[in-house]
Image: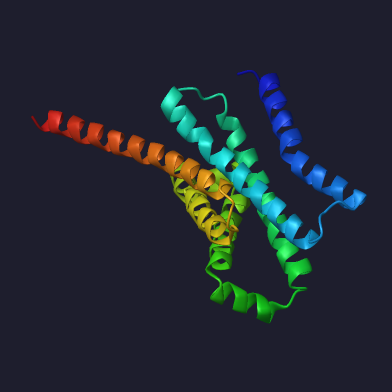
Length: 208
């Protein structure tokens, strides 16, 4: 893929990824954030954080299944946007929902499992965002960097549990997201197992 095409794809990701925030700002300006604006903003940002995270996690399984790799340069950008929306989601909960009441926040994290899972997902994404630059890849070394960035799947699992336990009765999209994540994890595990079997077969052939 040419550099021009890559720039075009990344520009498209910027536009699409910022649309949810643009709509939210527009609705706020129009005063159309429902009767419970804090809850609406928190849920909207959280939903889109999870969707973008799933999109970033889907790129490698897509390459493993199809052999197509043009989407791989978008992985880091999507991951950063996922962290951006998670940070906004957390900031609303911190500033608007709890008004920086650290004691109450600590109690909620300890007593409410869905908040514990959400906080865990945020903590997993922080080192990934901090090491997202090419300079950090070089400093850590590619193998170490790849192992560290497997935390993205841990963050996905924690986010899925957060969503499942938080979702109100009558919602079904949380199960769809969990199923998508399970599929992506299954593809990665299947590929790793197949590679391990091939490695064992090659070693057995050398010994024979």
